[in-house]
Amino acid sequence: MRSFYISVDMGDLVYSLLFCKILNVDTIYIDGGNNDVKFNWDSAKFLLPLVNSQDYIKAAELYDNQPFDFNYGVHPEKQPVVVGTNLTAYHASKFNILPQDKRLYDTPWLTTSRSQNPLLAHKKLLINRTARYHGDYSFYANFLKYFDPELLVFVGLESEYSDFSQQFGIKMDFIETTDGLELAQVINTVPTFLGNESLVCSIAKGLGKNCYVEYGRTAANYIFHRQNIMYF
Image (tube, rainbow, N blue to C red; front, top):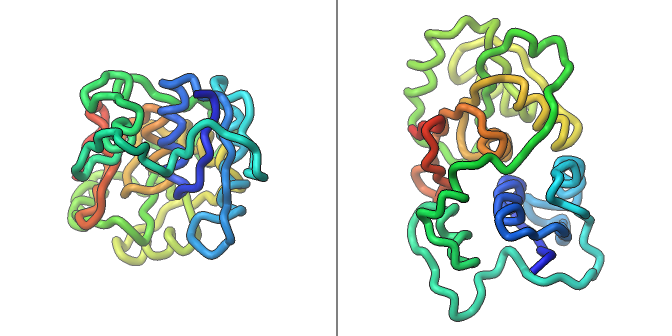
């Protein structure tokens, strides 16, 4: 197996790279569909620079009827499914990888350089919180009261930044990026991530950053049993 066909959410696509690395899959074809769902061709184009920057990927391309070995979004027939709320274990089961396999948790699967944006020089905590997958609201207020706002930076969409700032009554710097590689470089420059399950969260986990993750109470989550990740 050397190639994946992928048409999943942005965060799911980042997590799929973990399995590319484990299974030596070096080619992926990303399908943006009919632009009638959340993941679309703009999403695919946003992530292409990040995916192609990984040394174990020879080619990541937009899907245009290329032949492929495996449809990542489909569970193989007759392959036992891990049932539960941990999506890491579920996707591993598609490839007969046991949930306790250390390859799933011990080694980061993304690499990139650090951003040269001077705004990030002294930042200690990077925040992102999207509109979906919410859990413990109170943790943010209790956690952030110990931080000087000058040490914080929010990355993501401007609407997410506005919602978070208003909800928690905090002013901090904001960065919006142009593609997935630039986003990863920003994330890699700040030592710790705080936020919910999202694209930003998936990249932070992939880079091996310290993470405080708000897991969604009404959805399955990607759980990684790593000492530097705390779920709330």
